[in-house]
Amino acid sequence: MDQHVLSELKVLSFLATPILLKGSELGLIGIHHCKQIHHWSHDEIDLVETVAAQLGVLIQSSNVLKEQEKLANSLATMNQDLSKLYVELAAKDEQIDRFMHLISHDLRAPIVAIEGLVDLLKQMFKDEPAESKLRRYLDLISKSTTQITGLTAALLDYARLGQSTLHLEQVDTAELVREIWARCTLGVSNIDLEIFGTLPVVHADRARLTQVFQNILENAVKYRRLEGQAMVDITCQESENFWQFAVNDNGIG
Image 1 (tube, helix red, strand yellow):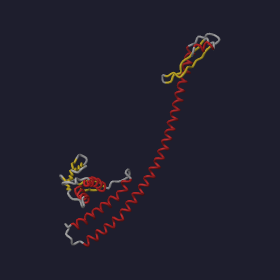
Image 2 (cartoon, rainbow, N blue to C red):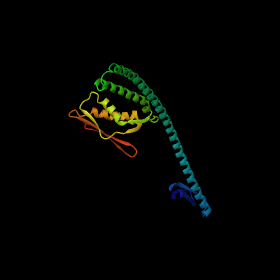
Image 3 (cartoon, helix red, strand yellow):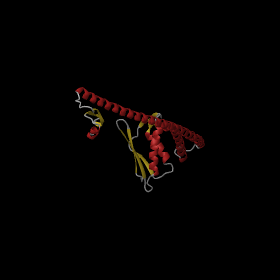
Image 4 (spheres, helix red, strand yellow):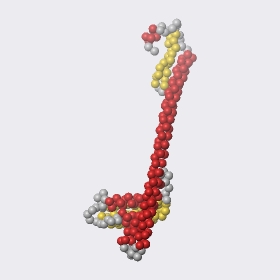
């Protein structure tokens, strides 16, 4: 306390100790005598120091409670935000689910019609040689409709990434690649596919594997070189826990 203030109050004896909080001084607590000089005993000094220490603890507890209250309010706000987000995500999931159902059903109807027409055409031209362009084109259309049917059936699984289930089966990747290549290069000339080595039979989801290879091969065909012979090659290497495929091309990409 300021010496001038003590003089103004005519304080003859003054005992004070700081109130500390984590090493910082928050204030002072003290007692004084104005009528006579007083010699402070050890008990009186201990009492003042104890009171100062208790006040420091109370102030710290008060600050902790305030921080806890702030944290509680923050958590409540976060819970409200999470609840809103959950509702929004649920609504979006429902919209995606309806959309994917709609796509699957709308795509399925024309595919069934195409399959029926292809079957009729096969009956009409059953005497055509198996190597003829007509028979090869009909086979390609038939295989393409089968692939589209599988992909549309898998659309709902892709819409629910966290809940989708894999339909695992033995897939001959060499056969799959050739089917996709025939479909991607229909009407395209001056581009060849070369497979180095033997492509494996893998335990995988056929629809998803088809989508991967189809995206890569379609991209290679789309961005092929227009002058000279375009080439695409596929290799595969077995690792300890997986198969590693590599697709290369000499296109403009």
